[in-house]
Length: 220
Length: 220
Image (cartoon, rainbow over the protein chains, first blue to last red):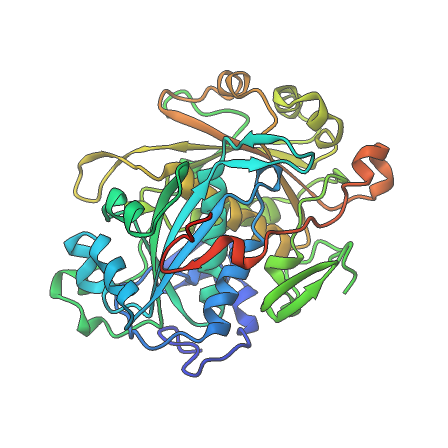
């Protein structure tokens, strides 16, 4: 399996090795073996920008669609733009200069928003207290499905949320959460030198820094 | 594959069928084929409460650990309690009466919190604007790894967050996000009749209600 590009074709058959439990990959280690899928996924910036087929892009949205949410409120909303369209240029315009420099090469840009207000199964108007949290669950599902299909994603906080809100005609009550770049992974050499140095899987805190038995330690 | 209990043993070898693209399972349908993993996962309440081995519980935390986050800030924190411990009884006490009635049978309860403040790679004190969103990404990763290993999870918003905050000794600045029940799936018959009726995969909005090209529609 070529770690850089495990799916040179647009394969719709994920590699079964991706769910095998592993302890190490690409400089990352797990203290307890974990499915490769989770540890092998990383947010690259080098992007080929090749056209993304419907059956890939919409598989990502399906994965997101089936994420869990409080009261099944499904607060997530996705607005996408494909490279080469006027909408894509508009989306690139929301981004910080730093993010524009690489995300302009994405195959698609996706804005993720959340709608806290929902109607319960019993027909009551309610407001979810966990709409951002739930939208994050949908985002991870999208990212993992992309990884399974050989595509890469990178979420961005570096954009003008007010510009984006107006630019995508977001209804009142909708919160702009993040923007996502989607593509096949490109070659690091296409990035500026400062970004080339960051083009690798990043590290994580130790389990002991994020997982506690019974209670947070006093010195946390 | 027995959909109710695909892993009667504590298998550490996920079923490769779980990443195959499918269009339908257990009354759920996808408009575009999606990896079974995402559509097959659902949040059951019937729980066997059997002991959860370390290599399972900590595989879930590893999956969460490798979720993406803004500036790699890793805002997620997990506090867990295993069934049969005083900590577990304390955790059950945070829950609403409705959730207590079934979640008392979980193998473990996990509180998810987030810490927005972080120190950047350059040593700057920063505050993430997407810590709840990122914690949700970690939660989805945990839930999907559980599903791959034949365990079930259900997140709860129905608990007393202030009681939980004090009960787990949460530091200032930590936000309590959700509580999670983890177990092997039990038999629906162990639930009260009202909950038995809900013990099945729930439906989702149509793709056209959550995914838009270029902008939200005017009537959204």
